[in-house]
Image 1: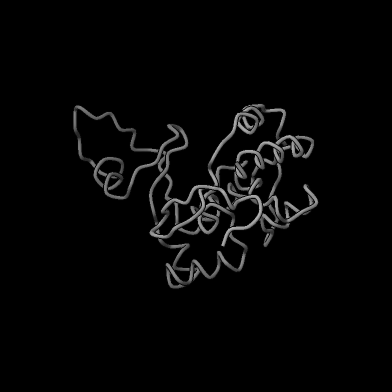
Image 2: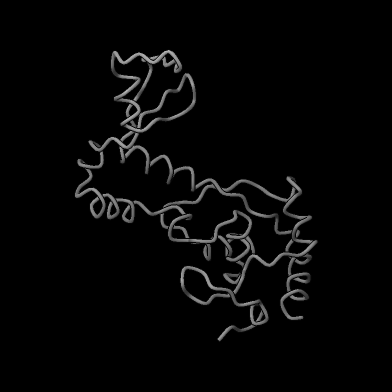
Amino acid sequence: MAKGLFKNLPIIEYNGKLSRNLMVSSKIVKDAFNNPSAFFKYTVEDNETPEEISFIFYDSVFYSWLVLLSNQIVDVHNEWPKSYKQLTDFYVQKYGSIPAAKETVLHYKNPKYGFTINEDTYNRYANSDFVDATIAVDRTGWEPVTAFDYHEERNDNLRNIKLIDPSFLPQIKIEMERLFNG
Protein backbone atom coordinates (compact mmCIF):
# COMPACT_ATOMS: atom_id res chain seq x y z
CA MET A 1 0.00 0.00 0.00
CA ALA A 2 1.42 3.37 -1.03
CA LYS A 3 1.90 5.87 1.76
CA GLY A 4 2.62 9.57 2.09
CA LEU A 5 3.81 11.51 -0.91
CA PHE A 6 3.17 8.75 -3.47
CA LYS A 7 -0.26 7.48 -2.39
CA ASN A 8 -2.20 9.40 -5.06
CA LEU A 9 0.10 8.70 -7.99
CA PRO A 10 -1.54 6.91 -10.89
CA ILE A 11 -0.95 3.18 -11.13
CA ILE A 12 0.60 1.88 -14.35
CA GLU A 13 1.86 -1.46 -15.60
CA TYR A 14 5.66 -1.62 -15.85
CA ASN A 15 7.52 -4.81 -16.76
CA GLY A 16 4.37 -6.83 -16.15
CA LYS A 17 3.84 -5.43 -12.65
CA LEU A 18 1.58 -2.73 -11.28
CA SER A 19 3.60 0.27 -10.12
CA ARG A 20 3.12 3.90 -9.17
CA ASN A 21 3.97 6.27 -12.03
CA LEU A 22 6.92 8.25 -10.64
CA MET A 23 7.32 10.14 -13.91
CA VAL A 24 4.32 12.37 -13.26
CA SER A 25 5.53 15.87 -13.82
CA SER A 26 4.76 19.42 -12.79
CA LYS A 27 5.62 22.88 -14.07
CA ILE A 28 7.94 23.77 -11.18
CA VAL A 29 9.79 20.48 -11.46
CA LYS A 30 10.11 20.95 -15.23
CA ASP A 31 11.36 24.52 -14.72
CA ALA A 32 13.98 23.33 -12.22
CA PHE A 33 15.03 20.45 -14.45
CA ASN A 34 15.41 22.77 -17.45
CA ASN A 35 17.65 25.12 -15.47
CA PRO A 36 21.29 23.99 -15.85
CA SER A 37 22.33 26.02 -12.81
CA ALA A 38 19.90 24.01 -10.67
CA PHE A 39 22.19 20.99 -10.91
CA PHE A 40 25.66 20.07 -9.85
CA LYS A 41 27.75 17.10 -10.88
CA TYR A 42 28.36 14.19 -8.57
CA THR A 43 30.36 10.96 -8.90
CA VAL A 44 28.75 7.91 -7.32
CA GLU A 45 31.21 5.97 -5.16
CA ASP A 46 31.45 2.18 -5.09
CA ASN A 47 28.44 0.65 -3.28
CA GLU A 48 26.76 4.04 -2.87
CA THR A 49 22.98 3.98 -3.20
CA PRO A 50 20.43 6.66 -4.18
CA GLU A 51 19.21 6.58 -0.57
CA GLU A 52 22.69 7.34 0.79
CA ILE A 53 23.17 10.19 -1.66
CA SER A 54 19.74 11.53 -0.78
CA PHE A 55 20.61 11.47 2.91
CA ILE A 56 23.94 13.23 2.34
CA PHE A 57 22.53 16.03 0.16
CA TYR A 58 18.89 16.34 1.22
CA ASP A 59 19.13 15.16 4.86
CA SER A 60 16.61 12.40 4.22
CA VAL A 61 16.57 9.02 2.48
CA PHE A 62 13.04 9.83 1.30
CA TYR A 63 14.38 12.01 -1.53
CA SER A 64 16.10 9.12 -3.29
CA TRP A 65 13.35 9.47 -5.93
CA LEU A 66 14.71 12.95 -6.67
CA VAL A 67 18.22 11.55 -7.19
CA LEU A 68 16.76 9.05 -9.67
CA LEU A 69 14.37 11.48 -11.35
CA SER A 70 17.16 14.05 -11.80
CA ASN A 71 19.01 11.47 -13.88
CA GLN A 72 15.98 9.97 -15.64
CA ILE A 73 16.65 6.62 -13.98
CA VAL A 74 13.68 4.29 -14.07
CA ASP A 75 15.40 0.90 -13.70
CA VAL A 76 17.87 1.05 -10.81
CA HIS A 77 19.17 -2.45 -11.58
CA ASN A 78 20.33 -1.50 -15.08
CA GLU A 79 20.75 2.28 -14.93
CA TRP A 80 22.54 2.72 -11.60
CA PRO A 81 26.29 1.92 -11.38
CA LYS A 82 27.13 -1.54 -10.15
CA SER A 83 29.54 -2.04 -7.27
CA TYR A 84 32.86 -3.74 -7.91
CA LYS A 85 31.45 -6.99 -6.51
CA GLN A 86 28.24 -6.75 -8.55
CA LEU A 87 30.25 -6.14 -11.72
CA THR A 88 32.57 -9.04 -10.95
CA ASP A 89 29.58 -11.31 -10.32
CA PHE A 90 28.03 -10.10 -13.59
CA TYR A 91 31.16 -11.06 -15.57
CA VAL A 92 31.20 -14.52 -14.04
CA GLN A 93 27.48 -15.04 -14.63
CA LYS A 94 27.42 -13.75 -18.21
CA TYR A 95 30.87 -14.74 -19.52
CA GLY A 96 31.98 -17.50 -17.15
CA SER A 97 34.94 -15.60 -15.71
CA ILE A 98 36.70 -12.26 -15.75
CA PRO A 99 39.40 -13.55 -18.15
CA ALA A 100 36.63 -14.72 -20.52
CA ALA A 101 35.03 -11.26 -20.40
CA LYS A 102 38.45 -9.77 -21.24
CA GLU A 103 38.72 -12.06 -24.28
CA THR A 104 35.16 -11.68 -25.59
CA VAL A 105 35.02 -9.06 -28.35
CA LEU A 106 31.63 -7.32 -28.49
CA HIS A 107 32.35 -4.91 -31.33
CA TYR A 108 35.02 -2.75 -32.92
CA LYS A 109 35.43 0.99 -32.59
CA ASN A 110 37.26 3.50 -34.72
CA PRO A 111 38.19 6.59 -32.70
CA LYS A 112 38.96 8.50 -35.91
CA TYR A 113 35.33 8.23 -37.04
CA GLY A 114 33.70 7.96 -33.63
CA PHE A 115 31.52 4.96 -34.30
CA THR A 116 31.41 1.24 -33.77
CA ILE A 117 30.67 -1.76 -35.96
CA ASN A 118 29.77 -5.31 -35.07
CA GLU A 119 32.08 -8.24 -35.70
CA ASP A 120 30.30 -9.33 -38.90
CA THR A 121 30.72 -5.89 -40.44
CA TYR A 122 34.32 -5.72 -39.25
CA ASN A 123 35.10 -9.10 -40.81
CA ARG A 124 33.34 -8.23 -44.05
CA TYR A 125 34.59 -4.69 -44.67
CA ALA A 126 37.27 -3.48 -42.33
CA ASN A 127 39.43 -6.56 -42.09
CA SER A 128 39.36 -8.04 -45.57
CA ASP A 129 40.16 -7.39 -49.18
CA PHE A 130 36.44 -7.18 -49.95
CA VAL A 131 35.80 -4.17 -52.18
CA ASP A 132 32.42 -2.58 -52.63
CA ALA A 133 32.43 0.59 -54.71
CA THR A 134 29.39 1.94 -52.84
CA ILE A 135 31.04 1.75 -49.43
CA ALA A 136 34.15 3.71 -48.60
CA VAL A 137 35.73 1.97 -45.63
CA ASP A 138 39.03 2.87 -44.13
CA ARG A 139 40.38 -0.50 -43.07
CA THR A 140 42.76 0.96 -40.48
CA GLY A 141 42.27 2.19 -36.94
CA TRP A 142 39.69 -0.35 -35.78
CA GLU A 143 40.10 -1.46 -32.17
CA PRO A 144 38.35 -4.43 -30.57
CA VAL A 145 36.13 -3.62 -27.60
CA THR A 146 35.96 -6.49 -25.15
CA ALA A 147 32.99 -7.24 -22.92
CA PHE A 148 35.12 -6.31 -19.91
CA ASP A 149 36.13 -2.93 -21.36
CA TYR A 150 32.61 -2.15 -22.58
CA HIS A 151 30.93 -2.86 -19.23
CA GLU A 152 33.68 -1.10 -17.24
CA GLU A 153 33.32 2.04 -19.35
CA ARG A 154 29.53 1.91 -19.21
CA ASN A 155 29.59 1.47 -15.43
CA ASP A 156 32.09 4.33 -15.03
CA ASN A 157 29.83 6.57 -17.13
CA LEU A 158 26.83 5.68 -14.95
CA ARG A 159 28.79 6.98 -11.94
CA ASN A 160 28.57 10.52 -13.32
CA ILE A 161 25.21 11.86 -12.21
CA LYS A 162 23.70 15.23 -11.55
CA LEU A 163 21.94 16.32 -8.39
CA ILE A 164 19.45 19.10 -8.08
CA ASP A 165 20.64 21.85 -5.79
CA PRO A 166 19.14 21.44 -2.29
CA SER A 167 17.94 25.06 -2.41
CA PHE A 168 15.26 23.91 -4.91
CA LEU A 169 14.02 21.20 -2.55
CA PRO A 170 11.37 23.23 -0.66
CA GLN A 171 9.84 24.42 -3.93
CA ILE A 172 9.86 20.92 -5.44
CA LYS A 173 8.45 19.39 -2.26
CA ILE A 174 5.50 21.80 -2.16
CA GLU A 175 4.71 21.28 -5.83
CA MET A 176 5.05 17.50 -5.65
CA GLU A 177 2.85 17.27 -2.55
CA ARG A 178 0.22 19.39 -4.30
CA LEU A 179 0.45 17.26 -7.40
CA PHE A 180 0.56 13.86 -5.66
CA ASN A 181 -1.97 14.51 -2.92
CA GLY A 182 -4.55 16.11 -5.13
